[in-house]
Structures are given as C-alpha cells and as structure tokens.
Length: 183
Image (cartoon, rainbow, N blue to C red; front, side, top):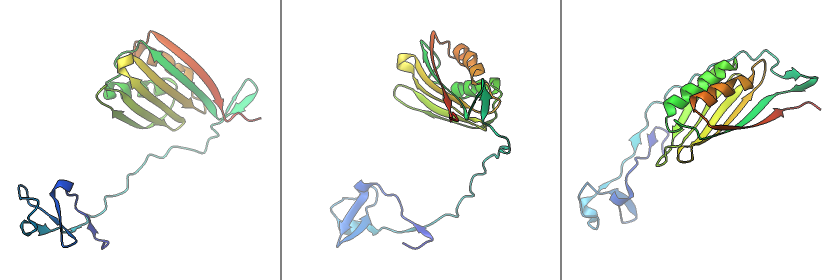
C-alpha cells in the first residue's frame, strides 16, 4: 500500500468478491450481482496529527523516602472500600482522586477515567509526579479497589479520609507496602 494511503473501513456485509477482487456494493444493492458493485478505493491519508505534549515534572530530586531508619522508593497503599457510593460517575471519581492526591501534597500530571457498561463500573488513574492513584469500581457490589503509590515527601495516608468521606465508605480495608526497600 502506498505511504500516502490508508485502507477504507467497509462493513464486511457490503464486500463482494468478483474475479478475485474485493468490490464494495452500494447501499441496498443485491450482494450476488458483481456488476452492481464498484472497485474499492484507497483513500489518501490525512496529515499526521501533532504528537501530544506531556507535562514535564522536576525530576532532579531524590524521591526515595527515608523513614525510621529505612530507605525505600515509596509507600504503596492498597484500599478496599466497601458499602461505598457514587462509584458509577467518572467525573465525580476523577475529582475525588485529584483531591486525594492534593491532600497528600502530590503533583497531579494527568487524569484518565474509563466508564464501563452495563454495570457502570469505572477504571481510572491519576498520574502523579510522585507516582499514581488508581481505582476500579464495582457499583453493583458497592465496592472500590484503590491503589495509592507515592514517593518523596508525599503522605499517602492523608488521601484516605478524602476517599472515605467522598465515597461514603462503610468499611475501609488497608494494606501497605514499602516499595523499593533498600536492603
């Protein structure tokens, strides 16, 4: 295929093969009549869109944490929220995760949410200069799985009250892990 062309996406139901060549049937034309079809064409490619520009964070700092005589990359909190609400609203969830990041003194770089159906669950991530906060929700079970990984001077624990209050969680289960623990 020439560099300046892309293939045209055609519903398979409209393709007719006559004499070994694919042809496109006009809307409503009988599919068995090869004379009623026209040869498929290549469409010139559009100019490439510019590459996205991503924010750049200051990475000259040593983001490893020193705490109680230990040195490690960061604290990774795993939260299970039960009896939670508003777990089917991507815009609300994005705002809550960003507030939780700011409460921990983290720098928000990018937020992305994806809304699933039919149950309305949401998966999303807030990318931080200091790592990330991610969420996966099951509204039909009033459950949310949240990961908070932060390094540097951030205090991931300060995110928990924001999340508990916003999602009105009846129960929060917490697991913590020091990532990159230097032996």
